[in-house]
Amino acid sequence: MLARLSGVEIPPLAERAPDLAPAVLGLLASALGVYFGEVCRTTLAGGGRWDLVGDDPRTYRLTLLGS
Image (cartoon, rainbow, N blue to C red):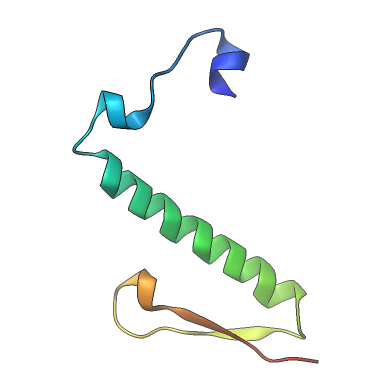
């Protein structure tokens, strides 16, 4: 999308910074997971709660409460 809007071809992240790509993808995956979880928590099944175990976002769990 950026290439289409700017008219500049942007190489994939893995080609520009191969050592950085896994860290960026991990951060992006965590952020998207939390965002999607919040959307689900506030709109589906009558709410929900986050179960935060430890400091690693990959271990966080969302429990939907149901209607």
